[in-house]
Length: 148
Image (tube, rainbow, N blue to C red; front, side, top):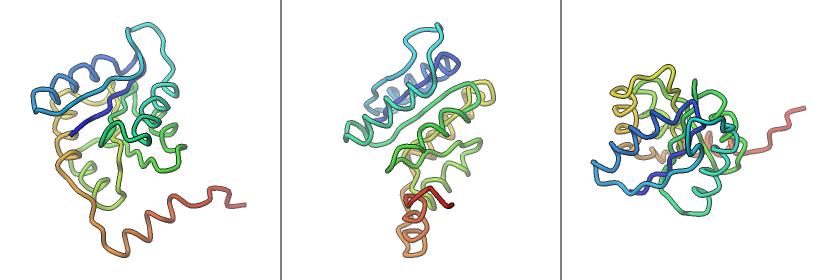
């Protein structure tokens, strides 16, 4: 599986650890976003990964910022991206099964590396539950966003 990793400067250390973990597991990886600890805006990192994923350059994405919140908000602005901020392996599993998440988001300031590895492992190993009710609900999330 090819995983696309992106982060801002606040997520660079966890990104490096997870890329190393993914490499040890035999996954292909590509890295986007902050090249160093110098300030790098999370929307730019999210956009890079989302565009690459939508272009078919990878199977799943991993986005990391300080909290995971900002980067997940930005990623979900891209049609066809279902980014889920996950704090537990169970959340990662449900995000894949029920919401067809194709990007997992993590917060470096809030997630210890061992837990992040467990979350990512569960995200990778879980498929999508293609029941009609799930298809219907996911299709609604991709629909128009202007509810006024």
